[in-house]
Amino acid sequence: MAYTRVSDANEITARYMDSILIGERLIDSVVADESAVLLGEKFSSPVMTPAFSHLGNMNGRELTGLEEYSLAAKECNILNFCGMMENDMFKKIVDTGAKTVRIVKPYADNAKVRDQLAFAEAEGAFGVGMDIDHIFGENGTDVVIGEEMAVQTTDMLRSYVESTKLPFVVKGVLGVEDALKCADIGAAAVIVSHHHGRLPYAVPPLKVLPDIVKALKDTGVQVFVDCGIGSGADVYKALALGADAAAVGRSMLPSLEKDGAAGVAEFLRKVSSELRYIMSCTGFGTVRDIDDSMLIM
Ligand SMILES: Cc1cc2nc3c(=O)[nH]c(=O)nc-3n(C[C@H](O)[C@H](O)[C@H](O)COP(=O)(O)O)c2cc1C
Image: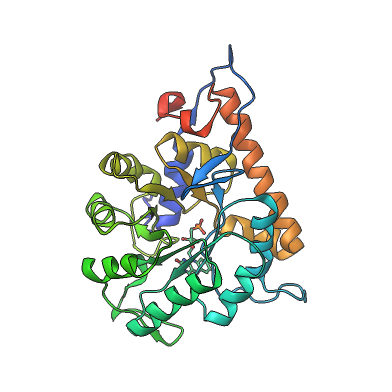
């Protein structure tokens, strides 16, 4: 029989997540409350939006996709993220009223990094951060839409953390060593992620999550996760393996494209409701209680 090699981290991640099964614990259980405290604030759910960029206007609608999903995050009271963009676009996103973490790119132009972090704080961002998993490309450091990226040192990251009063989130942590460095520089949270499979054979975030959670225990650093999250079951598994929250990703795009903010709000509610249902069926009353005792792996 022919053997097919699979190097696509997205497919490996999906297979791993689907291999994790869930048992039931119904007697004495209650209807769960899925609200979550993230970066010091209470949100209606541990489901978050992804740090997306470059979403134009969809189906001829007036607002960009970035503004539309931010409006949905506001409506659902969930933590919002955005990615690579200029300050004028970021301003439009904060103006939606969503509590937004701005993930700045590891630009080679360090003045641009600092300008975007400072602008975000001045305009009322909820948090800031950087996607450290977009430094390298196949020819060295990456060039993203004409913008050069650069290696980021521990000292550089520490200086960003020290430059802002906002919580700083490091996105793209996929190993214990980087996680410990994030704790050392004073990051408020890490996002365990392979940035939709940038690295061949990248370990599924949920597979490395327990080790990272263990390493960060008692540091106060929250652990978020993304990649392949598209249902309440996916979020439940992430929480059961120690995450504080999980971000949906491309899974929200069909709803966004079709129905804009209303479509994303409906999608986010569906994911949160499924999470609540599974929590109830597994005997966990709050997200803080969830552990891996009902996962079969
Ligand atoms: C259209 C698009 C734009 C993205 N832009 C950014 C970005 O600017 N910064 C960033 O950190 N991640 C960015 N990402 C990655 C997402 O934040 C997230 O890590 C990834 O999509 C998760 O994988 P999934 O889509 O398979 O769930 C982008 C992803 C997509 C699909």
